[in-house]
Image (cartoon, rainbow, N blue to C red; front, side):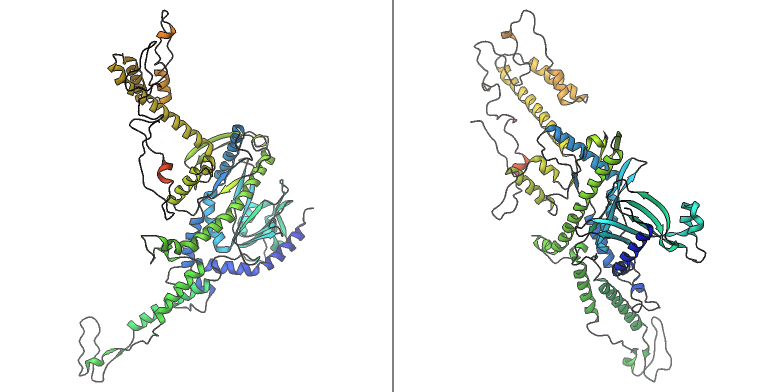
Length: 604
């Protein structure tokens, strides 16, 4: 049964009181990131010329750097239980295109920068799957962490969700003119009104708690389940804690020390001048002259500073980086060896673990959000024929689908940041090729684990097409190699030359290689008086030699018609090793062998 507005308000008040400490921490972090440290610690920054911090805001720098590293989207794959059947693969690829269309429609990549920032800063970020009836598509939207109150059950599922928003009163009155007189409160002169959005499996309610729970909008939930998912940073307790909650005092102390140092330097420069009694006039400015019998006593009064004053600033700098887990290598400072790179890897180890942990949390959330989006698309727009258009990873796509037919109750989405995530590009490539060379994984699996997103099936078709075209080119090259052998035996090579000329002419016109070969080797009807034995075997057999009954093959040709000493599928004088033979090797120390070698293979 749906909750009444009074029950909703009571639940909202209860959870807001429970999350009061969390809200205070979030507000303090926000103020520090905005540079308003005086609002957090007013006693440390008194009024005067030294009231604003003059040091780099390391909290804001670290948060932005972490967010930009976490923000790239993972790969969304729709693998089925059996990917052997071509029909099953085609259906999975269609669902994968639908998922990528939802990603593009929701503009998740742009949202991820703010979402990752809120995850790092506040310790959690909520996301919701909404129904866009105008575009007839489900939409995934990340929400602000401040003012959000998720209700999580013991299984980690979000059952209810509250979001508090402060909006201008005049804007609310213009959006809801039919109840504008109820929104305006003459007893309250504030220009802002508190609006609360409530969502659960039964309904969505928008109400004003400060206006006697005035309901602005109420609508039933057509999905019958809570559509909110929360990406939570791992914590020692149930409270959401950000990356910088415990490091704010260090940042503020560092800023205060810098202001004190500046104030000390200013007072040292402006200190009073001490002079002996025989000085009658005080001259100021450059090249000023003062006469005295004791000139060594003319000086400014020194300002005594503790010897460890400036050393303490370096201690605070080190403690701040340790507290926010932000290594010096991220700002270009490193004492490690740049030759071996092992010291840099050690310094970056803590930073990498933060990225991997965040990716794991977002991957799980994306899996649930995409399943909800597919389920919503099937349930709300199941019988409608829809078209998805856009550009994904630089490639335009245009698909037509019907959710009830193409989704068909399968909401499984595999979200991967890549099996090789966290490895540098060289080692990632070597690792993948070694696993492929030892038959540990398939080509299809390796494609779907790459650190960038593309359609694995379409890419496989493109690769196979390229390989077949290369085979055609090698066949034509072998066909041309038969010309010297034919000419030495007095044979007429004009037929070979005509076919090669046709292929070259068609390629110069822009014709695809397969179409050019098809035109050059078009079937020709033999003359009426010709017998099957007299028909040249060169038709459609590259590299073959016309020979009558009992005629010997020309020198240089094997019985198969190929050039002697040239392996099958290779061009004379040998062939190039594939990229896997070049890279998939290990040295004695276990490091990747990136040296190239050339191997010639001859048939036994």
